[in-house]
Image 1 (spheres, rainbow, N blue to C red):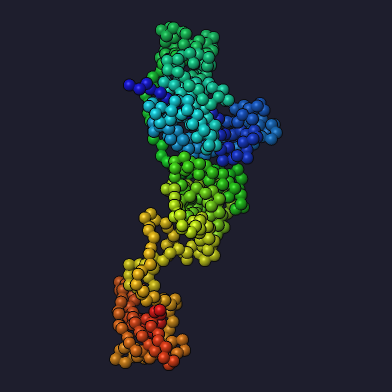
Image 2: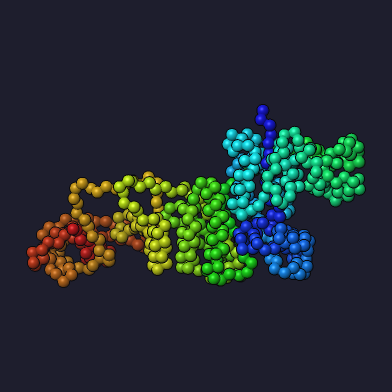
Length: 502
């Protein structure tokens, strides 16, 4: 039987870290997060630079304003929920068995890493790789490893901010926890006062108390604290599997109207999406940007290139062109990006094959054309399931799997040139067959006429249609030949030159 082994991912000051993750310009200055309604709002989280200035939790807005050059942010439950999902996704890359135990101002996740040595190496290597993965998404956290989940959690709470990894050897939990203060056990106010009155300040001092006498004075809660201090408290692991959801959202500090400012914020969010997509070996197939507007309502646009890609410059360019063609009707209060994962595209060229143009250039060109002629007029023509003339619709370009190279036909065939729009002609009939017509100012005598081919449809709708077609070989006055297709509208009458044959 493999001994149980757990890792604890612990991110302190989670509210301020969640806000600064997408605001890199504020990371180098003191920042505090306020919670509550004005004027009773108080500081609930702050970064290290603010703490060095003397700021503490519970300060009011008036007290915070006395500190110069400090950034004040409002707590955002939406951004914290998105960041929490991202951290669970990072932890899920090392083990599918996760249990979230987050606190009010800290993110806590227990990870069952039993049996992962053959995949990721020793626990030290796994812990450092997890710290690097979390740092790549803009967060700072520490990782502790122990055979007891509660011991790993207590050690994570007691680590200094400069420490990132701590491994507790099997069977040495009590010795490793002995120097930690009793506050890491998160006792109640009454329990903390009782321990302070007894002079118990560390877990080692608490673990040295007689269990029987402690239970007699504090009840079963005293027994729980005693077991936690010794690293012997058992835990029923309750895993929850996180789902891959590539999404980012950010509430702006003020109203934004300029497109360049919106794209600057979207660029930081795209960085995080690309980092997470690369970690899962996928690419971004589509990105939907949702803008929360001032006064209510949202403005959503979806950008989908021909091939999935993780090129940030391409995504910024496509979003810029799309929002420039479809701007939001009012100022923006919040931005959300939702990405659809897709397979990474791989192109292998032949040794003697000419180099093909980049697919990203085609996407940018198509976006510019759509901005000029409209989205409904750009794409590829797809035939409809009908014989009606001009029966097609425009679909967006898609690169599908398994499309092979097309080879030219071995035999020569006649090519037809469709006239759009069809040109009106004057036709003379004999015995219901065309014998003479005028086309582009010339008179043509029909040598051979094949037809008629009749077609009709949509008889159950007001768009009822019907026409007949003739394939004609005609000769002009200068003895030149013309091969063409004549069509007559049987509903409204009239002849038209539909196509020319080469």
